Image (cartoon, rainbow, N blue to C red; front, side, top):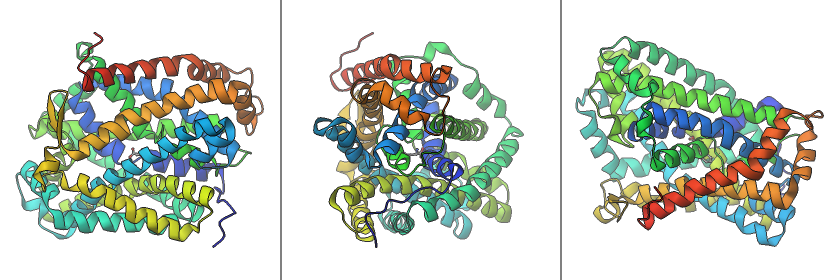
Length: 463
Ligand code: PHE
């Protein structure tokens, strides 16, 4: 297999499908609702939307532009555009990506297991779905098999290369996922107490906004948009010079946000209908949905419930593909190794790194009660999420803004954006992106991350 020719997307739509495929995943349907539930409902939603469009979108433009200009993985990109001293920033992102994939794959394994158990097993006869979820995630055998299967599937597609693997799937499966969510939303809205759920989700109580809400909404926006660790630098490196980066980023952001929004519209009516606490945490989706599928009756429940979790698996798959592609591009670019061997080696390695996360959900007690900080005992997976997603991604975004504005320089950045968008200079888009990257993004992101680290780990509160 040739290692010197880099893949590329066949068209702008192909890129958008792949980038949106990366963005839309468990972050939208699993993580977003439980974060909304934990951190204030509608107030969180509003901050989240602002973070995504105002802070994150310009950073997305920056990532894609860097990757397309350098035609390399994140490490190589930083090194080529900024010199050796900056290469560590790329490396740090790749490491974050590896760690994110390690736990993400475990959660994808849960979704896969739920698909099988709903469609072909007896999941929908359990009644107490909170207790079932607790037992399910502590069950080593199932989790081992399903998350290994998920990683193998991811690797098989990544071996096939970006173009064949990713574009085609996303274009078919994304509309299917949206359709099933819409149908379920309509169903959910007919249930008792549905509007209490909608009220929680859409009517803001601004008194709930505090530093933690700001931080969680910001980091969730980074996670959901696949930003801050170089996934979009990598995909940008396969993006054609003829296409418009700014409008593509706007589309990807809008698509991602819309699906997260719909996931909330789906979950909260069901949560309030069943009297589940919105603060249920990472089990929220797995606890709130099965009861509804059960109520649909044995056959329809299996079909709709199984279909939902199957589509969730596909959404997760287009994200795990992008997560695995990052270290693969790094190793093949930098060490000129064969793609196939590299993919399998990294997939096995990352699966192994994910084992402690998998076992920290009740299976092994010291991993389940791993450390205490911020007044709470945290399991190993939560620690990995805290460090490598919630802190590392905004920090990565901070570095990208500083890098583009002060090292690579706005003039070169704008030159890159002019490819595919010849009239870019002088537009409001240029002004917006430039002001955000050079001042507002690094200031806001830097402040929120710093304040949170101080508060969480050092017990120093700035307010
Ligand atoms: N954006 C993906 C999701 O929401 C997760 C992800 C994060 C993918 C970072 C790639 C990089 O599910």
